[in-house]
View (tube, each protein chain N blue to C red):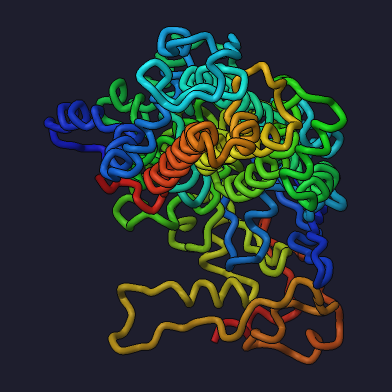
Length: 298
Length: 329
């Protein structure tokens, strides 16, 4: 063991190129449908960022004279009941959806994962108090909980983020807690304790990086689900004000003209479907790529 | 030589649904400066738990119910288990190496980060200084191209290499005592010998003491100066290495010695084993826990409670009623 061939160092050198993230990327990119999912997500992000450049019209300007027009070269998806350009509203809707999805999921991830980490790491009364509260939250269906919260807080983007975020805290906390309980069993955690690592360092440096992979998948799929929930809330009129372009409320507005102007509802509907599909496929791909049983396989 | 660690009447228990498991029951032992001590026993006899108790690393449902742990004259039991005093003892004063090198290192951090963590934590070194020291340490434990290997991840190391890293980490803060909990059990035989030699050499260099926890008498025979034999959470015999091997005074020790294959043995002779299983640590009888498996048992063993450790020779203690001549056959 002490004696190793001279060539060892150069062999090490060449092997350094290989990294875990590169392998994950390779496995991920092998699945075509996951790549499609990634393309859709990137498309969504680009659309959201460059909405003012991409949209042919201002999505909020009404033009009552040209209301409820059929699709044409001037208005690709037609205009709605107050004459706003539907294509522009779909493009700006991407902004709303992404903002709410990232906000709500981020909120849920930060709160939920922190709680789960604390509950799983310390165990005992902290575990029981936190996880029983999470169980209670989980007993209420997500969308009902979100409706409840937004009914109390009122509409608007910020409150919608809060409502959807709170509804997803429990899932994150539970997953994290379970992961931490598994990771905690490992000898390197005990080894860390034997060298006197304190709790905070132990949680952040030793446990979290070993526990977060499944949560990454959950967050990805969760982003899609949040967009769905946001659309549902907007559809029910509990979401965003009519002025802001949001896919859910567009479908809701369009339902009165479903037979005369179906594009009004179909366009945002397809957008929602596409984006949710994208997040789900990306999540599936990530799950496969992060599967520890595939470690070492290229 | 001066004693650095003295454990008196340690009791560690685990409260489970089935009952209270007395993992360590009234064990006393000591470790002198620059000494190699062997702790030997079967699986589940309390050897690992007794060592983790010294570090105050027993977590629920386990609990140290009584005893003193005198380290450099101070009772570690007076400190809070996770308080700053205990954390400054762990790693810096008493370090530990574990059985499974495959799982003892954090898979997501490089070897370098893990070795330097210790140095930054206890010696307050800056990153660069710690890195330099880490390279020195890895070099010392015989890791070739230490400087480049510092940036490798644990999965790029073999088992023996990882155990070397663990030894380097354990010794990085120059601890007074190194506890090695079955350090070679999961390594192959040639690597085992190298690692043991390395540990012996390293503790010599660092003037530390070594506690070798093992079930392999062959390992302690070669390295340990004193040996503690544990059975069912208690120390059943202790003495110098020579006395334990030449004049064992407890039937369990004799049984263990017979389990070791010898090269000069007559061909075709079956290897002895100790019949039966260790007792359930929940319902311990008052009398000798080894009684059901003891080939020399006499009536007195069945009637009277288990005796305390009695002096049977020079610094040689055993817990047994049986006349030593009876055990010589």
